[in-house]
Length: 511
Image (cartoon, one colour):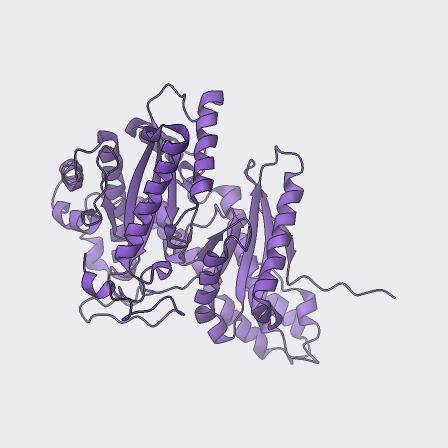
């Protein structure tokens, strides 16, 4: 593995800190998507690249991120108007025309006697833009990956043919992996269980419980298939690394050491399988897979397992290498060659269902490699963190864009403190250093079929909100953390419900 001897020297590079300016070798500079002539990329795509899908995903990404990126310029305009006689009217007209929503009157009406609370207005706009794209996601399925969609049905059928009845993927909570399902791997989001954790270090007990629930449904309801069918639960960990700035822009939870990130992910997978074997004597019903993602290029590398889930951390198949080797081949021959390369990359005889699965994932990633080449010249311009808000709690099915959200999946702040602390540290560099607040969206999904579940989800939001206030009291008191509390019935195809916010007007006490 590249830079191995240096990466192991923990005294050379300490991490994580606030996002640092990345350095870049003169041979691998990213190109500005507005000025760079991408014509040669359009004419030089890989034969496996899905051009229609790339164009579709590009439009979605650019439109959503454009709304977030408009916030600061619009607020600067509003700030310059605050002493105008008709300030409130002008401010509302501007935000309605640009965003389609109004600013809260209680944050505007006192601008004539005291400065505007621009931090609060910034957080409000982030929350409103988030709600707008979240509502669109649940109302119209803009990514065409919802349950019952053609894409999901086709992939579910393919997954079953590979011998898997459930795909459970844990990416790192880093926002640079938030798009890993729909973009980097090109998997319909409803066909996979995604739960992000810092360092991709998923909760083993929680995952064992998830396995139990899935197996119970197979025996009781035949969903997603019956127990007589010889399929397995596929658990995947996606760690990440940086090819441009490996010592600073790798995984913060592992000190930007890709060897440690990969080894820790594999160990967590093995511990999960051992937990199943020790408790239920059926480890053969669980398959494991380890994937690495280069956050600069979106190229993946897969540690192909043997039929017994044995993986070699020093051996993998690289989508970037496959791209180069198969670019001159026909579609049919390229797919055959990928299959051969997958089989050769395994430490021992691989399972053919796993080979078929990895072959498809590698082929899917080739489209993403061209996506990044055509949009950014091959390397993302934001090598480091550029998330817009922190997502805390359980849910966020709607987030599938790179560097949009830092995830902190948790039931309690105490339990999820390591994930949340990393996120706050990241946002101290992104926002607090610019005098902007950290927007935190709290989410708890619930089952509407369970009596009282909605009220408990709301109570969970309030509990976590209170814990965040206590843990980061100084930031909260300075207006540098604001929260939005949301819940959602996961049994319905409906948007989230807002149940509170730190920006709600303070009720006046009656005498």
